[in-house]
Amino acid sequence: MGNIIGSIESEYQRYRKLGEGAIAQLDDEELARKPAGAGNSVATIVWHLAGNLESRFTDFLSTDGEKPWRDRESEFLPRSVTKAEVTSRWDAGWQVLFSTIHGLSDAQLDTMVMIRGQQLSVCDALLRSLSHAAFHVGQIVFFAKSIRGASWEYLTIPPGQSSSYNQSPTMEKAPRDVTRRK
Image 1 (tube, helix red, strand yellow):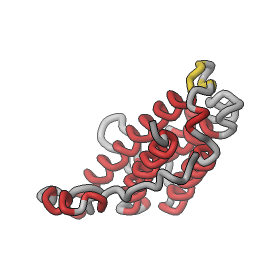
Image 2: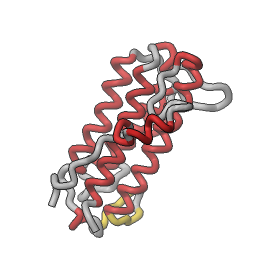
Image 3: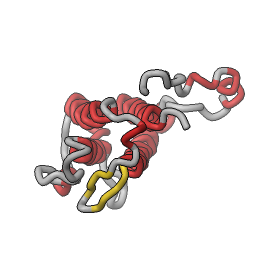
Image 4: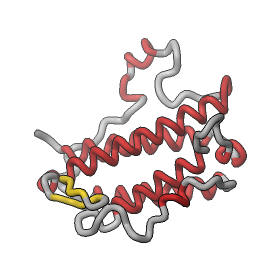
């Protein structure tokens, strides 16, 4: 069937890169800006996603993914932070995730883990987490694009560039090395 852990890791890396591309286009004030209505700022989403990744993937195979030290509610508090602080928080969450994934193999996909008292296979937990990360990265990209308007630098295929992309389809996502794992 192939290298499933490697495929999941590759997708996490793709979403991390998209989020970083959006965050890089915003200044400190824009990172803290809330969208109209009840939406969260980019900084708030970063705090939440990083907190989730740290909680879920610290001692992933041996403890419940919802750690007693996590204060999820505080992740959603409004915050005024610098880009350096946002980037540091972002990196901290992803570092815990990738450190854990590098220690996993496809042979462990059926191993059971616990998240909020619910048993899930490693495969299900990873897919659930990947979907959660993709959802929030999508929010970050959408909101950052709305803030930047005409000065937005596209992170994927810009409008009107599909033909160019199809001539070199790896420009968006570099091929991954599937020989890295057993």
